[in-house]
Length: 499
Image 1 (cartoon, rainbow, N blue to C red):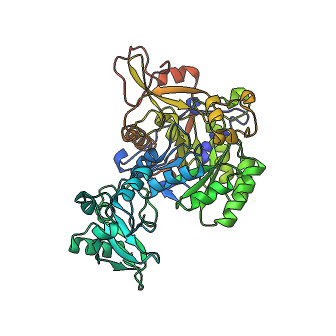
Image 2 (image 1 turned 180 degrees about the horizontal axis):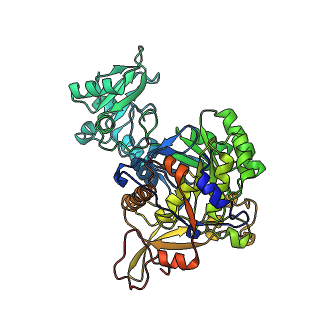
Image 3 (image 1 turned 90 degrees about the vertical axis):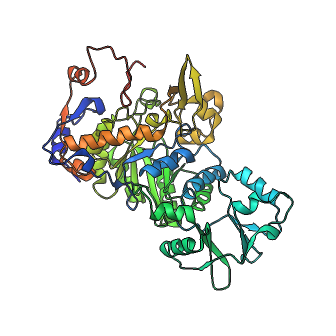
């Protein structure tokens, strides 16, 4: 969608790179309240979200805990690739199995296994559930084990077949979630195994999850067709085995994540994925110019990730001398993508007001790293420094990340470079501890709703269609921030620059 207002504005700066602090949005007439706005948007061609926020595929930002939190709020998290393929798949599975309508790939046990073996598996896999179907060698259902059976069993060497519930209530293949709910309620049971006509186990419904879905007071959950939370995972241009491993975990989107997305390797891996897994959506990046967008879409990309060097921990622009300031990059790439695929603005978000600016420039969503790195759900190390709490945060191109992880070296095309010759394109540091990610995201969501109200736009699509930019001078920038005052109490959505 071409916004004639933004188009006319940007044409005044054909060879000037603009970023967030260079522009402001011009207010327009509104006849509704910010609370009445709708933040739904597209992640890819085929995947929608209820809020336009994505947590970045960084090893100090997104693992399963962050991805679960983002999906529960309506966004999505991308599991980083500085993990083994197996561990990354496990992280995705934790997200996908956190909330289950129908659990098709439920973990099963055999009747000859012991309570101790079950306990060991739970500890090793970090399972937080205690209900297991018991099957024979032909996958026919024999019974079920629940927390109740385990609670009242004192003998750790007892066979599961001796303590299981025999002849449990079951339902046939094709049972809907509504039908399952009625059976669960009527029989006052916690799990409902689904079997075919031969008694072969097909999956199961869990009462708590079914209730969460059908009685949910949280309609913003970002879920797939089977009511599982959505989750994405990052891969590199040569990660063929990793991709095959991830596809076993019902991953919703594969993110081909490199520093230079406009390259032969990225195009070839996109084509391979779309040939072998035509139903999976592929997000490709990072890029910052229209030619790259055209080539990636032609290869089969379902969304384009835009951003070369805007991140707070990225040094690509000063180390390599390349990159395009983010507002200009997002605008130019969005014009190239048109409405064919969504654009994701990746990096550089410092204030909540940077989000509507990204969307006005043409993005459908934003990816954030530093803004979320300080939260409780990030995997970064929590640090106490000079009496204050901080969280470690590093660029995937930082020297330590590249020394430790092959995924980081591959992202910056230095997979075969010895440690002493690595050329980092990022830094390592720490950010103030920010508490629960839900509280941080409330500020970003609230700021976006307020911006839509100021712009007279009920939806993100309205903002992309109607928004108006104005150029900001240095004096205007200084005026935009608190001035002529000593701040004595921190605001939850404003951080003083020198800190």
